[in-house]
Length: 109
Image 1 (cartoon, helix red, strand yellow):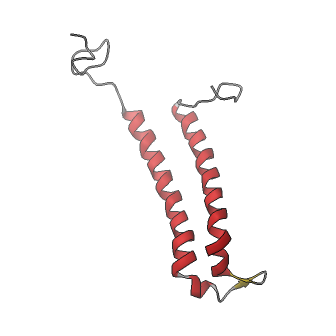
Image 2 (spheres, one colour; image 1 turned 90 degrees about the horizontal axis):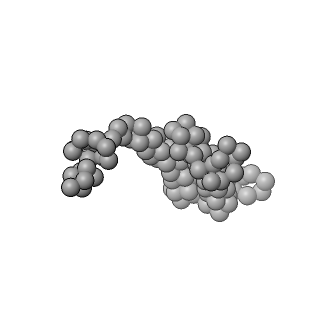
Image 3 (cartoon, helix red, strand yellow; image 1 turned 30 degrees about the horizontal axis):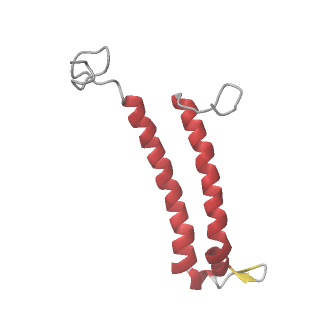
């Protein structure tokens, strides 16, 4: 029976597990980033666009009530910005942990 069939890593003793500390840290930081960005999205789209719309409608910006803006355009703009922030931050995180999909010249592998 091979080492992998016994639950170990190839070349290691039976039952030997590879060091996954960096993977746990990578996913912990990824999940924290997602939680922060999803919280911002929730606050802008649900809280400002639905729950606080009456209070925000008291403020008028460029002729439109602020609550209306959050409900119609603001949440979409914020969502697009959050996607871009996530992509940039994940590229940096991938580079930091050595799991980037880019080559040295910046092109995708």
